[in-house]
Length: 160
Image (cartoon, helix red, strand yellow):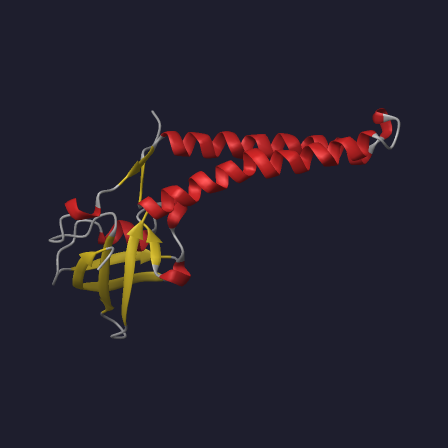
């Protein structure tokens, strides 16, 4: 069974644009590379031609994977998100109980995750550990550095 992923409207549009670019510009560029390599003579001993054909195969695999992701993508209606507990597209302010550091994350799908902008995947250790938690609750999460304990300070919607 295919895995359904949830996206913001912005995230789904980004995927749609990436797929369109791969199908148009990407395919055109690879076709140009193949034509250039073909013009260089004997195909049986043409490493450039082989490399271009391999690149074409990889490119088509990426397109197929993106099409599969798109076919199982769903847009989340942010207005229907329950802010009483952490869920996909929740903006969560947490406090590290060990060092007192506070940080805010938005839980998103794996494809939309971007730590620089504060978006973490619901499939990440911290994302999984926060799902379903309510304000005031604490959770112990196993991360690569060991066990960490976090307290949920605030939950809001993604767009707030």
